[in-house]
Amino acid sequence: MSCKSCYGRSLVMDDVTGDTVCSSCGVVQDFDNFQAHFGGISGPTGTYVRLGTAGTGNVYGYKETKIYEAQKVIEDTMFKLGLSGSRSNEVKAMIDKITEGEYGQGSWFPVLTGACAYVVMRKDNNTLPISEVANFVGCDIHELGRMVSRVVEFLELKLPEFDIVDSLERAIKTCPSFSGVSADLSRRMLKQGVFLVQCLIKWFVTTGRRPIPVVAAVLVFVATLNQVDVKINELAKELHVAVATCKKRYKELLVRLVEVARVLPWGEDVTTKNIINNAPYVIQYMEMKSMEKRGENNKHNQDREFCLDDLIDQCLSKDLGYGYGSYGLVNDSQYFEPNLSNEFPDELQLSQECLAMVYAKFLDEASLVKSISHVEEGNCRKRATGHDLFDWSDWWNGKSKLSKKLMLKQILEQDVGLNYLPPSFEWGCKVYEIRKKKIEAAKSRIQTTMSSSSENSLVRNDCFVEDVNMSERKRKRQFDIDWEDFIIETLLLHQVKEEEIGKGHYNTLLDLYVFCDENVARV
Image (cartoon, rainbow, N blue to C red; front, side, top):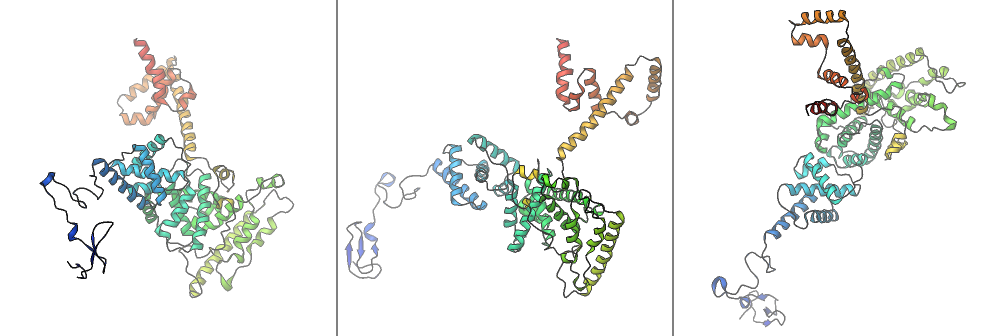
């Protein structure tokens, strides 16, 4: 016989496998390895090939197929989330422990996989937004959140708090909107974003809210300051959050900065529409306040709203770099010198005439520079709309502690020029005051009704006759009584304390004092 490859006749028998091999080319001859089947289905089977096997001689059953498909789902989810092999193995071990080695199939299993991936990342203090996981898994964020709660409860874990600063850093590194930003500008924007995010934490804007919309709002604001074109709609889609929520958080950020700007000499003119133009001054002031040392030797600083010496010298001097070129301004801080008293450092004396003169001069020269900038187009750099008076590379200092990640206690101890209470607390105080007025009005109506004076009785009868033909709409407008007033009256008649009524737990009070009494009376 000759070789099937080289057609040579140097065929030898392999001592190990027993196959015929060509000694010249080394090709194994296959015609001697054929094994015939005898007896049909019940006859002997082949050595290398068998239907329904993978070469091991075992048939895949339902359980093996289920586990195989489940592992494919896990690996696919880990690949979409960009997690490493060790994290993937940790997620597999967690799922194996939860399902007791059974894994599973169906629409619930990808949700469980995403929940375990989220828990694994949170355990290692690595931020993975739950909205991003829900988008990759293909489920609702609330459904994924419930699954995360069940996983944490089953495994008896205690996850660390969500780190919004890490979320900001991750967003600025991974979002396509910032892909064209240089490394230096990206680091600068990151420090500014960390500063503003921690200020929002101090102002309780993030309390009880989803953190990612806050991150989106801060990134859009910081990008605008640094002349980076980022749209809030596109960034919201990249972060998988609602656009309306991001716009609401952006507006809240502007409102807080406007309130901080009230201490500036021109603060009354600052609004949410022009806060972008004044943001460098506001942030610079906030940095100065956060770096201000408070101690026994600096007690006089507590009485002063802020130090205007350095701020005015930097904001109004020609060294700040407004882009005036040869038409630079003389240092306008000289107008403040006569009113800065060195004899009384605890008091800052500024006359209204002085502030008005400086502000008017600044506006006149700003309009002059704006007209000059159109002539020198070849020498002027590209500026964003409405920001062509500022040298954006000089206003940011970046030496404040708030530019680095701090603990919550350290953030609350910092002074940034504005102390703000949680919005829910302020709303609760307003509602409590309204409820107290309703209680007083209800007490007055009860006293009027229970009065035994005949004159009051005649007046009430006359009012009743006049109101018979009135519509319900006019009657409600005249007395201004709603369902809450009737409930308060009922509780007062059942001798419920005013402090308890003021808390607003009407259903509980009605069950304890009203309906409970009726049931006892019936028995």
